Image (tube, rainbow, N blue to C red):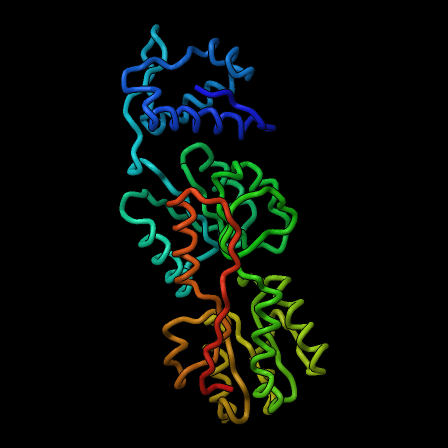
Length: 334
């Protein structure tokens, strides 16, 4: 086995050792039935602690790649194939566009990958527990870090070479991991700019969402305010907006489908014609928004492509950061 170097934390070190052994098995440097170095031999060979070696060997045992024979040591139990690769996916919550993303991701990976999915629902304690419990049991970790607070300590538990961030970059995290993400600041600015000729029909644009159950990236806010400043157009961002306060002659961007449905219901009660008396648009396109009230205008990223890109990085073992493109679906609600 090759020397292990460039490792700075115990967590990364035992993953590095386990990965090296797996690569040696794939390359036939180690064959089924071969004995692995003893704990003491591995400690001396790699200049690492006994606990680190034990953690690496336990990881291989959990995958059934290695077995322990009492009194004799650790042995290669089977040759790893692509079928044994396990992927942990951690989303914030499931909704229509996440379903599109999930299906694209898993379909693009194929049946040979074993998928486990969990949801953190914007709960930092739950997020920490889910990541902590997953460490050491998967080959790749695909994490959607939709938080407005710093969760970098939790993400630091995952070796950067096994981590792929999906959709967003969390504040405070600096490790060099892979990612397929939205450039929220640029996307919101460019998207709103492309709709300026329609937005000027209205006195202001109100971006409304429930800040308790909906993630709103800071970058998106910055991009929206940049648009407002450059074009001299009033934009307000209103968490916890009371839907009864909608006004004729104003435009609204409903972030969640719940807010979207509430807006349509309230506009109907007030006798407002959507697209004439009030403007309506939304983030994150879904099949429902395509047909609802004849079609809702959306600014969105391409979630199907995001899933394909993430799967490609994992399949090809590529280390990249890819900004996913945004899309405008201009329908009759503005």
